[in-house]
Length: 468
Image (cartoon, rainbow, N blue to C red; front, side, top):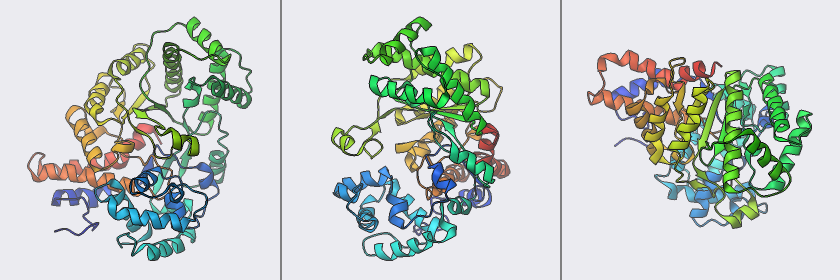
């Protein structure tokens, strides 16, 4: 029987151990998609206690706590202390066995804080106090944690109207970790509520200095901001969409749809789909012109609980996997760009595991030999960034594409203590490959190549693909 979380955690063969310890473990981290607050990095934020850094904004934990019968005031409430919330989280952890939160929690305690105790009500206070004391030292500030985990590049997620002032400040200062913005123009496509859309367009007009009264003006303003993002070192875009949009449309139709929604009238389902289709193409062309990488995260149904949404807003743990039918529209969208020579390097992330093979085969349709792995099947995302989900993504990619060209893992996190997710992924990757060697399904005589392959997936492929 193996010990929990020992040095060979998740490594079930000698070959897996060799691949991880000799090749994957020490590679720097390129976190090319996350939701860290750049202001916290610029200010080198110090966290007051373990409850604050662990539970502030962590909808994964809130979701588990609610499921365990914890009242909302101990998840997101303003009338409870960080300790009281942490105490309830500690009481939830034992019930989270076989949920990835159990692995992540103890991996973070061990690798971030050097704490090897199991978190439960009996150990909660001592763990809280020990970790809180460390958080009050410079080594555990926002930047200190990035240095601790050998982070080389971080790409945040930013709206076109953002000032990017913190990115510029970090670059001027010469902070050793590259902190780059990512263009996330979802709000420019959000035409479901006309009043909200108009307010966003007016904000876009203000920050771009371009008066907007028609669709062409809006695109000019967005191009202005796209150029501005490039001056801050941006090299990636990201799009959070329910499904792919690839309706046929004419410029006149899009002009009319913009005038209608900007004027305050609700759009039909068909009009919304046409408008979103046009916007996705426009954004893709911009990215291709600059040589950026475009990312598409699709398949989530957001804010399902109307009561909690009204009380707390979005991103509070009430989202779920959707069952959208996307293959035809995805193919049509990518084909439209490919036919015009405007298909940028692209990463596709699905949330429904049923789409793994779909994405793996779709990526192969649009590889053009210009870049190794130009169209990427993105890593297991959100509900799929756990052991079973990661293995399923790796297996589909291996069977239907080239695993060796994969750009690897990301945190997709708002937390500065989530970097062990890269370790988690690397261990799972090495175990998968190592076990194939042990079973004779891959040649033991090619361990040198397999070791290089692991290093590439952990680090080199991302560095070369994004040209960081």
